Length: 232
Length: 385
Image (spheres, rainbow over the protein chains, first blue to last red):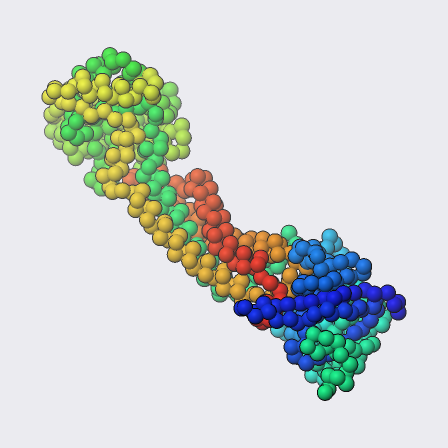
């Protein structure tokens, strides 16, 4: 595992305006994520977990401060540049899978590849590899409605890794699954981290899920705190 | 092209909604195709009018005759190129309902004023020599299955023969065609001289004059000169361009343009609301999916285009079926109505117009949902979901 930083957040602030009121989610937040990390972020509702995930995923921008990815600033990119950056570097895994209901598993997995210059046959080959990795080769033609929650989440993982991104962002990936299926999904994430070197940041409420990560950080009211402080 | 599958899947995800929306657009373009064809058929006389052709008729009505002497008087006027004349014979074959529009003309001058009528030289020569011959239009020939050499009795519901009876026997000497598909060939021509000699009353009079000017710029000047020349005579004249004459004839039925505009506009406006509402709802229920696509890296402009293409595809799907249906209806009606509306043709111009309207419908109904997809903020969309 390398110790090089993949993400670096310097003095990041995020403010929301609601009517005349300005709400601060973060102020002066500093953090870094090393390449090859599997980090779990825990914290109560409203602590800023999702906002942090949005900033790391480039779907939201900070009010001030700097966010760098692999040495390149991303906080000053335009919306279009951020879209390209996300397509090239990030794989997203959501709590509710967010598969396209009208597309079968293979076509769902193929979506990120539509943003590349790969030919149709090359795309099909990569989709087959990704589905094999998550153990769903035999379900390629199945629609999301024909699959269980666990299977849908595995399709979502295949979609997240199909374009071979460096970084995976998981927002409560097991929040909608039973324990056994959740463990299977988490083992898969662990494998992606240990065997394929993916850097993973996972937001979770579940301490059992956090145990699969190499380390856990706790967020409370927009600040990183020790686990014990969170319990107080 | 890579996005086409995605667009197609979005378009067809709710089959019943797709069917109903397509059906609504189908109806709109069916109406459009059929009504525009009808208008075109009614206006074909106006469209095919020559720029330099004028019609001189009696000031009171075209049913009042003019003296034959007017032909030579008009011919002698400045700016006049060719002059011919016509008499309304009326005409029906066997039954009054089986109308054959027939006019008594001077063969040589009539065909020089109407160069768009094409006759084989041999047929023309035969007809010119044969006083009791008739030159029939191609459409009339087809409708009645008449051929050259056929003897056909035509009755007039206006005129009688000197020898009694209202039926004249004619020999088909030739069949004229148009040099363009829209030229009316739904009538027949007989010799004025023969008609004038054999009919019981109203000798040496003509129904109206048709003339060509040496230059269309002289039309107004020549019209004025003719009407002034015959002012204060027993038969005062009213001269107008052939286009105005035909339009006045059509306008007797009513303001066709306004009626057609009203029907087409109402149909389109209703469909616009239906399709627009459907598109807005379709995109609204896809908010989460659009946010996912954006998260994966699909640029907003790309999603904007996908939504617009989807709405245009919908418009073209229903529209092409509609215009196809109109074509079939027109084809069926054209045979039945050949006598009354000879130019009932859904032509390239109407089809081209329909394609433009399909595109416009697609763009108008798609623009609002496309903009909302373009502006959709990922964070807001997920927090809503």
